[in-house]
Length: 397
Image (cartoon, rainbow, N blue to C red; front, side, top):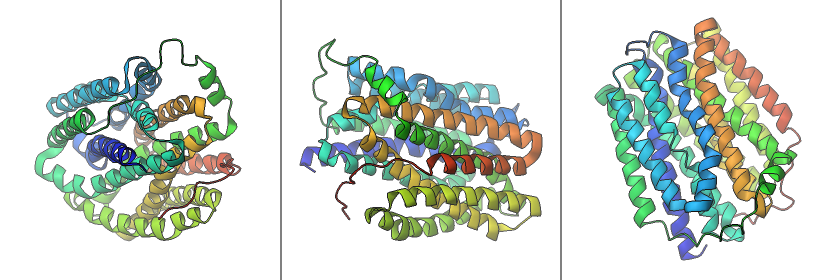
């Protein structure tokens, strides 16, 4: 990479990491802490409050991506981050679950993923764009991992309102990075110089990209549904919520070792398709293990094993899929492809929270994990013949 490309990649990965860390921090503790608010005795309403963020994101991802084409990437990114920060402060204040749901919707209105990814594409050459996308994907995975370790003790110290205030502070740091660290964006093309609906039509009729869109929807549906049910299982197994980080840390350490030492090494050797199928298979196995643990009253050991398997699959896919989208999309439709991909990701966040909460109320945690097993199995069938780039970029350590 050129120095400007390294700076752009690192800065935008940092923006993603700060924003996603704030988002992920609440996941391991949200279901337990929200239950204390008026209205929090209904798991379906708690799931809706957790997932509505994704629904609003999905509605605004493509419009804000278009706005970034029209009015400039940085303006849209800064406006979206400001909305996210305001929603975080509102969530910290929320006296009831209804107000918390409203605040989560305001957070979701800051739908900047497509704009940030498009800016990264603007600031990097084709030859290094995959590496830049992988940097961003890795930063999201690391944010997720860090949040699992630090969220439970932080929640025990400052509570859910404190986590949301910390989220607002992290978002302000992200805004500062966009304003003063990210390189200046290139001039926008003149009005009429950009293509109209053709890129979107090309994306929506491309089977390879559609399989990845289905995949990111399933991935984040599973992620949110897990966090509706798993914290309660750990408490029921005798582990106080302030000590959940111990299970998360052990599971994450093993999962990163497997991901880096086995799965990514296979990917670099040209076995990308096998790695993707293996990662989905790990999610399928994790859902089955969690269902077994709930149905048979298993202890912390099996829960920790299931989470390790889940994290290995999740982090592998979270780091690999965005880069694969950027490589498979036609250059003229890359922005549209990433916009659709991020929209399906946001819909998955909503579906996982809302559906997970409803299933938890109707049939308990077993119903959540049985549904997750079915979804992962369907995804594996869809992705079995996933088309891959004709030639992968040169591997780099």
